[in-house]
Image (cartoon, rainbow, N blue to C red; front, side, top):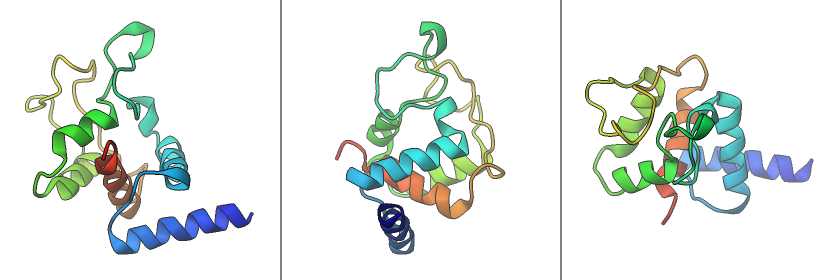
Length: 127
């Protein structure tokens, strides 16, 4: 019980601060948030994992997303918007690397504050 409360307080503190840091209990909290929001249906955390039946993964691995967007101005806001509103299959730079055509909107599956926290954690992967 104490660990759950500590994890929840740490998550709230990071949301208030606007950043998330990969590592330890926070990794588990973020993976739990991702699982409960349905994100892990299409995405994996680690790069190089195959998708269903050995196909390309449905969505990009979050380590790959972190590498693609790390240090780019506006990445946090852009990716949070993609999570909530979805993406266009016509402008995806993931074509040929994933089997999914676009990301569906997820505003009904995850709150904006949680999406922002998860995106912050994703961008911290591999640092």
